[in-house]
Length: 348
Image 1 (cartoon, rainbow, N blue to C red):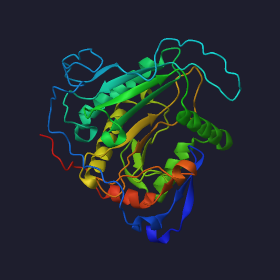
Image 2: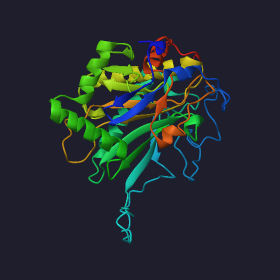
Image 3: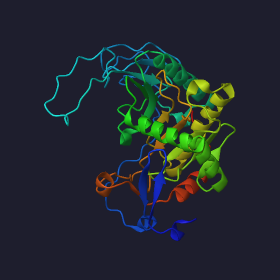
Image 4: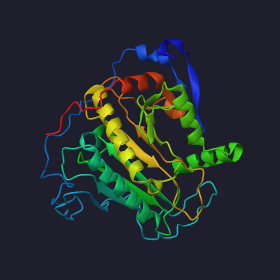
């Protein structure tokens, strides 16, 4: 169903149990807002000023080893600390609630080459990152006080990345954060009411419809979700029901690496830019409880709207009322499907 055929409507997000307003006619509005700078891939393989490059001194004073593969370390400016926090003073009102928060924040450098991104890495190089993510999830999740392992990447200055070196972060928490907690509740309720996995049912519906699927391989499907908020938001879903990275066999890990390569390349090719995004995996919590309802997936939230320099802002009604989008998910998926899978900036 094309943009012109769709009136203003709202769509339900069963994972978050919330609505998004879709206003297709607003794609025609003129733009006189902020215009950013186009981001080109870096041509520098080693930057002596980069605190993530091999052998360099980090901002916190420690020196990186001369690594030639993947390198991880505890974040020098971590938002959470592993030491048991002190007991907080009681507040006078039951409306003033606080509790200690404990966690462990690590940084994972994907590659020693400063100029690369996931889109410009090879599938084999990305597969090694998938293996590293899997080890980190297992090792951190095995700590008896860790309840959730959040793997994510902020790509590009537009999404707040403080360093262009290819890297992501892993925040492991002594509690289940709000977003995965909400998804746990929604998936659990769907399983209890239907006997089926929510995302298994949803993926079956999307594959039958076809119009929002960007591509799929033997093990993963990439689609612009029915309820997408960001213009070119993508949900990457495992085709087999599995809760977390360690449950994937070797072929499925290859499939994940292939899907990440193909998706990020399409993003870059859409506007011929190093495409910014926030990406993260949602997977089973790591408590002692069983989570049969959980289905592994990744969210990609890219901000670009009209071009390499015009972004979507979440302001006004979206902050005070509910999210709203102009480009329909169907149109966004069609534009991503039309993108080539050979990167516009060949790697030297």
